[in-house]
Image (cartoon, each protein chain N blue to C red):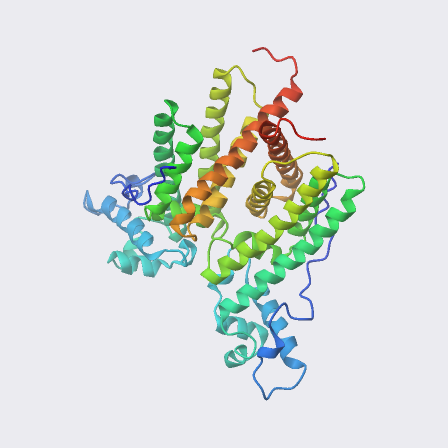
Length: 237
Length: 237
């Protein structure tokens, strides 16, 4: 009925070009193509090692190198330290998820509810054993400062896009909106907080969870419109 | 202006009587008083070891025993394993925080806003270097299943109390409330999610954060009242 289709999508893939600031930083004396591949290999190795009971912040450099099949020293050709790898992983996770949710939102403009469309896409990704998304959901509150800042930065990108959407949709209906940035922030943090708990509940709960989140978001939106009307009683249509 | 007074309160103390299911489970042959003290000692030792970059789930039994000054084998007189210690810690954290926020809410009934009163108390505790609260905020998404369930259980206790409060306050004003359990859940999860990020921002941000949260909560409450009015247009006063 809700159309949450677990495991329909393939997991987010680690794309071939490295996320940011990469090839230039590779020390000299190494052949042309190999380093870029190895960087992705290290990210993929880290992803294989983490899971519901294993946080990125507990991985050792030695472990990741072993999993990737390289000597620990070769690790430094790609990343300064484990922190840099963890941040690259977070950035990658945020970018992929924003792209996917953005696509869902675009599709939803014609017809289906944007809120539900985005929430359902989010849950689909979650159930597609998408470890990149799991990293983003689970690990914002543990780990190094650099790591937490990276998660927070990704959440803020989401918030910014959502805020722009809210303002645009309200304007199209001739409505004003009380504190759209705050509403976007509340929605993003709720979806991530409650989405994070979905990882530990059975998939049968997903439909109820999407329902709950959709209702919470409706309350927030409705409240924001009502408060906006309070503040500007003589608003132009 | 807002009255957020960081570091005014003493940290939550680990109380003398053990949280739950304790003394009876101690194996025979040990003197009367000592075991209870040692259980609290182990919890205190674990609290000393964890911090912003060190999660409870990464502590080893050996480490905690060493910090408490006992042999690893003596650990088992108090807890089956590290998981049981972590769950005891979570339960303790939840109980203490509920007591403190509950007191703040009672005080707030006469005069000050209940929402602000509770939020300010929450932030005060956070800044009082209250490691028990930090555990609750940071660690709900990593760690063992037993551990996550314990955090979730504590959050649900909060939600239940908040829901009862919302219903009571609305009834006193002759109002109905759309889905009070959902509103309570949204508020609790938002405060914990955004409160968790406060741990990593400077205390100067606290006032703005309390403001943000208070506004988000206002939107939710306002939206819930508005939706309730939609659903029951012929409500009795």
